[in-house]
Amino acid sequence: MSSSKRKSKEDGPKVGLEYARSDVDAGIEGPFLAVFPGITPPKNTPFNVYKPDAEDGKTKKKRRIIEADTGKVEFVGQNFGEGANQGFCRYVIAIRDKETDKVTFKDAPVIAVNRTIKSLKNAKTHSSSVDQFFAAKNSLGEAFGTKKIKQQIKSVERNAVNVSTLDSVAGILHDSIAAKTTALPSKAEIKAKADEDRPIPPYDLNATKVEDIYKLDTLITPAEYQVIPFKTLLDKGTKPLEVLPFSGSTYINDALVAALSISKKDRHRIRLLMYINFLMAFSTIPDKRLDDTETVNRIMGEVPSLILENFYERFTERPEGSEKKKHTFTPKSKDKLLCWIFAIALTLENFNMDSSAMTKDLSLKQTKVNELFKAMGCKINELTATQKAQLDISDDKAKTMKRAILTVPLTFPLPKRGPKAK
Image (cartoon, rainbow, N blue to C red; front, top):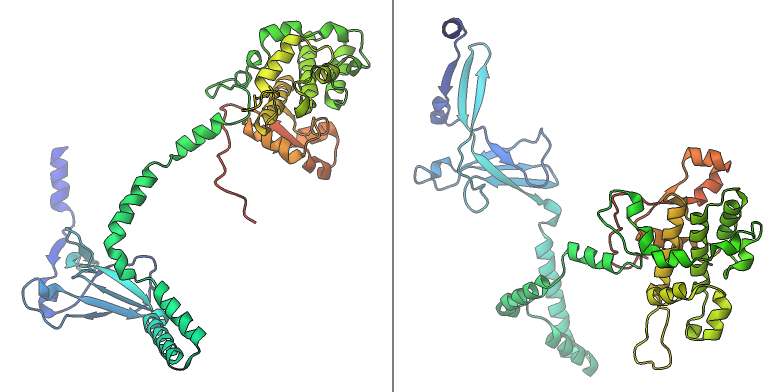
């Protein structure tokens, strides 16, 4: 195999390599490698090459300036001085002659080209002319103006900021700003803080199963689950809300009627629906009546005391500096109570439910309900084609119906950076 390789090298075509020294000696310019930051000229733009006036020394003989004018923009670049592209590489371009099969190498200096918009070249001159105009105007005002005008001119001069005087304090300001900004929280810290402040039940961020995100034992303790009086509903198959404290829930009524109408009662489902009803009733207690035993008993009815005590512990706060009032609702605790309801409902609906199912029951706006579902990590999606067919509804009505879907991995929306744009 090695002999065949040597044979192919000896019998193959020969390519001549040559360095274009003759072009350099003859003064033939080019080629150049140009770097255009931001904008490039059209490909047919002609560039002129110039040499500096003074060319003493061997390195100075290689200095070149290139220039082009497109009518609106001027392009100027050079391979020396401050505007040059500082590098430690030497570039050459290889040119192959197809007839002679000869490759010629030519030096290609790198030139950084800067652009100048011609219409803005006189901006500085215009600015100076404006300054001259105001100086002349002030001189006329001081010479012939009224006392009020003279006071205005002096006031403007006193309040004028001399930028040059700020140079001495620029470093101090920079250090002060740097010290303040280092104390600002990072994006990760802001997100972690926002997640902690969410008015939602305890969750498992690392859950791999959707049912483990909001575990039922954290929503309803085993002790609460055992004392839910579900047997009171077994004989009320058509009117279950008559024995429950909250009688205004269409969602709870329809779900309980369906659960009680079957021969083998789903006791687990009945218990969860009753617990949601207890939560709805608790949310209707006026804030000023939370410590009024008579009002609470009238609204909550026969709710077991253990469940009621846990409601107070989870969904109310103790106001500071108040001896008479022991419990109060805050906006956050109210939202927490609603999220508790939605979390149990999601468990009942296999974590995919109509987001408007309890909007009327709880007297809430749909935007508020969707906001709370999103805070829990749900996605608010439109109905699928299969769901539209099952419900047998029009496309216009389907657009108003949204599904709240909880999936893994659990993700929360990013915190808002500021108020909405008006």
